Image (cartoon, rainbow, N blue to C red; front, side, top):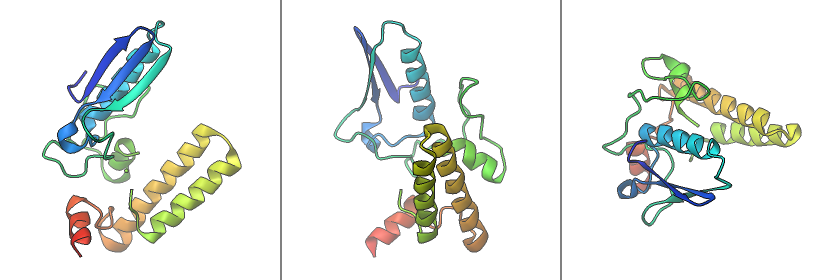
Length: 166
């Protein structure tokens, strides 16, 4: 397990701690795969009855890592067969779809998110709802790439810093 996640057993409790306090526990790929491993370890341990997810330092998690020096979006990590496939070296949506699950959106993205939430309420099923949201999220990336040449619509780390300074 990577240093980005700590795992501690406390009797029937598994304590999983996000461990990148310097970057407000922003989730890079190493952390994401380490979280998968930690949750897998906990659910496969018959003595564990409760899983507690915590964040080291002052912040629980700033979300996905979009600009720290340790951002590792183009690096492969070991993963279980039941989890997402390797995104490295894939083209277009294949790379993003396998990698992302990411906050501020342009109006079209927000409209898609609202529609996805409404679809979830209609379906009242967790997995189908999550799949609907995730698919529409990537339609928004494709839309942004088609109409503006930037799948993130300028909402990468530099773009958000410029926007905040305005």
